[in-house]
Each structure stands twice: as structure tokens, then as C-alpha cells.
Image (cartoon, rainbow, N blue to C red):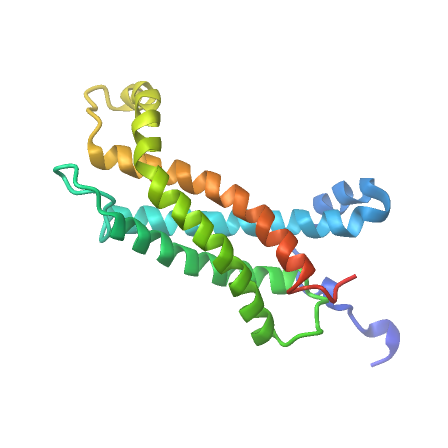
Length: 198
């Protein structure tokens, strides 16, 4: 195989989002590559958030409700559900970032990068989990009255419960936490896990 036939690592994984991302990033001149990476990281983060939210929704609807029917708060269930979801999202995010956002990062082995990525994610997770477990109840109490008219468009006889309020509060607190942690994860991983990429 001659030099012209070698495919650079950055072209090994293609998605329909590549062209729009490159087009947007090209408007940033000498910062285009960093903007392109951030946009890819954000797309991966959105997919990871879907994994995260999907896992929490499933777990709270089945095995780990955030509160009992009598209104008792089950903080351990919220902690466990968000922790399981976090692990699923980290695995998804690492895989896609390794293959699509930073395919040219070769200075460290994938195993070492996974450890570094997980460490950074763990710091974000601890802050996010503290935020969610301390804020979900009062956010749910504040937000539920705003959502009841919308819900009643589809279910006119709807009466909110403690459980529904706590589920809503968990999702809103998670959304805020995911956005804040996305920026932390991007900048920390760019400086440490994928520092070899120019």
C-alpha cells in the first residue's frame, strides 16, 4: 500500500453530521479544528444524555422509584438510578469520542484513555449527583405546577403525585447537571485525556 492509499485516522468513521459540523467549524478560521472537535463532543454528549435520561427514566419507572407512594423520599434510589445511568453514558461517550471526536489521539492506549476519561467524568458525576440528590425534590415541587396545565391537555383528570413531582424534578436537575458537566468534561478531557491531539 503506498502513501496515497493510506486513510488518515480521522476519516475512518463517517456520519451524516460530518459535513455540517465541518462547514460550521470552517467559519472559525484557525480555531476551526477545535470548534469541530467541540461540536462532535457536544453531539456525542447529546447521545450520551439520551442514554443517561433513558436509563434513569426506565429505572425510576420500574425498579428504583424516587419516592414511595406515601411521599417518603428514597434518596438511595435516586443515587443508584443516576449512578447506573452515569456508567452507561460514560461507556457510550468514551467509545464515540475515541472513534469520532479524537480518532487521531494515539499517545496513550485506549485503556489508559478510558481510565483518564472515567476519572474526569467521575469528578463531573460527583458534582452532578450531589446537585441532583439535593435539588430534585424542591425543583419538582416548583416545576410541577407549571407542567400540570400541559399534562391536562392530554390527561384532563390528572392529579400530580409526590412520585410524579420527584420524577420531574430529577429530570430537570439532571438536565441542568448534564449541561454544566458537558463543558467540564470537554475542557478537562481536551487538556488531559486527548492532550496529544493538535
